[in-house]
Image (cartoon, rainbow, N blue to C red; front, side, top):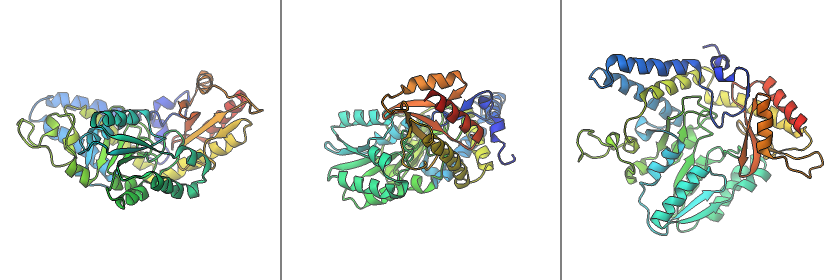
Length: 397
């Protein structure tokens, strides 16, 4: 594929102006065709025959290998999951907890992960604490943010801290967290707390090798910035999690010998895989990853994403009443902002703004915490689209 042609392969982008990659990325036609072809191959070989298993193994190994390479880990550390939440929860709930252990959760985590941690705390008699990063992100220049986050972490760690939950790219502010540095910081703690990273917004939008290989649980999905099909993701696990955690949901794929109920678990990350999954999704995601790779390295793609998000951020600063959440241009493709009236006295209902823009064929989303609007730029975003968004926002404001 010639560089820059990915957009033309996405029918979902036709006739609309799309800024919701952080919710779901458009599926390229070749990925959809790969899914269909995979279904056809399975049926032609026979869905449960000796002939079909080599094909199934090849497709699952293909996507597992591609995701592991992006994470900078060996394939034995990569489990295939349905989404970010299962990638977080399945290994998290299998760790050896003790009553009184503390979960330190940032105040910018997605409600799905937070809810899972709260339920885990209830069942295991754990305590909860908050790592405050939201206000740091909104007030600290990017160049100083890493140090500020690490200082906040140092201030919040206690003798009971057993797990830290911190996303790589925050889903609400769009700030980039220093995951590798945090992992190293936690290694100096007497209890060496585990580090769980929600990578929903980072995988596919920026280089993740350093962070993914340093975290204990690095969970992501394929349907956002990777532009793959919904229903397939993965989680990179540290060697110590593989050694310490036991399966939580149990299925034949968890077992080293699937036909023997008394067999041992897989010694690798497959112990956290459960049962029958949709193999054609593997074909689709692998194809989407190949299409992204044809557009440049993760660092090259991030450079293009940053240039586009900086254009949007700069344009927002020129609209009276538009207030970006971050004090300087975003580190990746998430651009969050609020709208007030020109005199700053009235806040515009974000959900109403989304509906009004949608009527014009332009799609962003609103968030509840903090209450704001969010637009995402990907490598398929154009400057013409950004100008259209800015013009419509100026009209509304």
